[in-house]
Image (cartoon, rainbow, N blue to C red; front, side):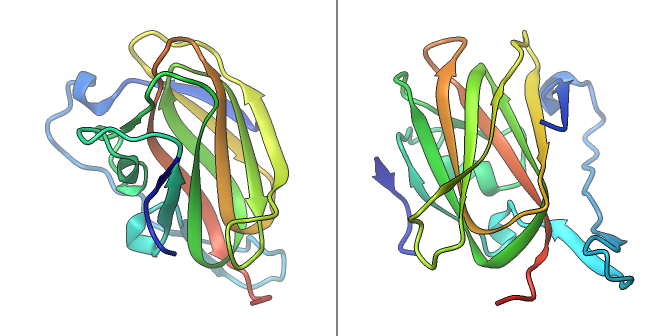
Length: 183
C-alpha cells in the first residue's frame, strides 16, 4: 500500500474527452443551489471529490509515477490512476470535514467489481459498507457508475475487487453534497 498523505442509481458510458472531437472547450460544473437537506432552505451542493475542495487521497494500494493516484482528485477525466495488475486494489479519500453525501460518481475503465465503504471517524478507520456494484464492460469508453445514498462521511474507501483486464484505471470521483452541520 502506498501512503500518500499525512492527513447503483444509474450507469452511464462516456467517451474520454480526448476521443470526443471537442473544440478544446472546458465545461465546469457550477454548484447548484438546492434544498438537499429537506429543511426548506437553499443549501450549496458541491463536488467534494476534488483536491481544490480540501479532499486528500490518503492511501492507494499501488502507484505508477506516470499515472499517480492523486490524478483521481484533480477533476480531469483525461488524467488517471492506473493499478499495478493485482486485485483487490483500493484507495481512500479523506474530506476536510464531515460531508452529507447526496451522490458518488466514479469514472473508470475496466473495473468489474467495486465496493464503497464510509467512515465518520477522525482517522480513516472503522469503515462500514456503503454500496457495491458489478459494472458493465465498455470498449473505448469510460465506465461511469453513480450511487445515491444520503449518508454522511469523513472518509470513503473504494475497493476494486476485480477488473475486466489485469489493469484498471480510475479517472475521477465526484462526491456531491454539503458540509454536514453535525460537526
